[in-house]
Image 1 (tube, one colour):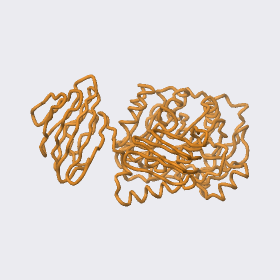
Image 2 (cartoon, helix red, strand yellow; image 1 turned 180 degrees about the vertical axis):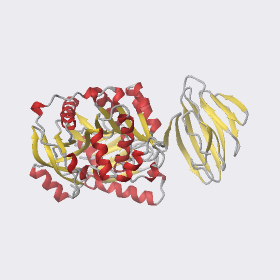
Image 3 (cartoon, rainbow, N blue to C red; image 1 turned 60 degrees about the vertical axis):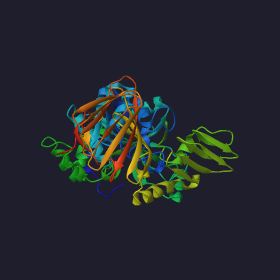
Image 4 (spheres, rainbow, N blue to C red; image 1 turned 45 degrees about the vertical axis):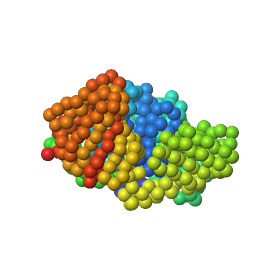
Length: 489
């Protein structure tokens, strides 16, 4: 815990026997759907992080979280905070769970960690109810036993209503060095304790001691609080953020966002409070934050292997073998991780999973594009896949959804050649429009204003060949865009 305590908001011990049960129907929920998930590289990339991936079933982690939360909270009280890089894919995914939620997605101008993201969500909430009880949930965690999860949240709401900042802790099943821990203090009620101390990602020896002493929980990263209490804490302990928040009625919240400190809610606020209650989780929890967790929680075959995708395994045991988009063949392996995508392969012992983050940092320092995106990149209008690239050329497969339009745009340093493979495309080049069907093409000269649309009822696929001195995605000027991405003047 921090040395500076918030004495003004300390709550007395709560007697739940005299407290009316709080109703989640009147509470608000914020789902945090930002983050990069570097420990699950090469599957997780900056432009397509782990919360957008289906790691333990057909639905993505984000979709699982949204489905769980709207079972307990009315959809108008649920807000999803992400960043501009992911906002269209997040809206697309939550729309499949409940179409009403598309309008509940909020976008940060850029990632600034969890404390600014929560404040962005609170701006919507306090305009409706300044004293609302608010729950905050990460979008990338695994929860089993949803009924008991809802009961734990209900219990947390009772303590939040009485002025406690509520966290949730899961009993550790093993000495995990990648999670934060909460040391429980005096009991407040059955299954509820004061939080005595927070420890972030201990070494192996300390993690082992925490598991053995029976007094520590894994920090589940979920919180509940009164909105007013949270903001009072921000005013005291995060004055720079408070100044930005206080000016929200004078200027848009996006103004000055890039200058905000990159600070987590744990470090920036929680660890500086002393009125914290920790609710013991009555449900199975894991943050699926590493390949070891994916292996540990995955369905195993007779030899202890977790196998996903197109994999041929001979004489392998206790391995995680994961393939996406290509054939993975392995023989004679024991206790290994092999994760293969179309453009990268990760191979290491299961005991070395914490090294993935270091590998990603090294790739980033080298300027590798493998950190940023997959070969297939999602866009609000569809997707594109890089098929091949070389000196002054790049070949893509572009798929445009029915009724979708790319922006009206131009490129300064490249020309493009479009060939329709399937479907019908409407191509505007300058002031002319061309309706193209299979095997028809159009050429877009350098600096020509152009737009690609799909007027049909089935997806249209085209092959795009780019040629020029500079072929990166930032060589684009948008003049008109139905997704609000027009270039700044």
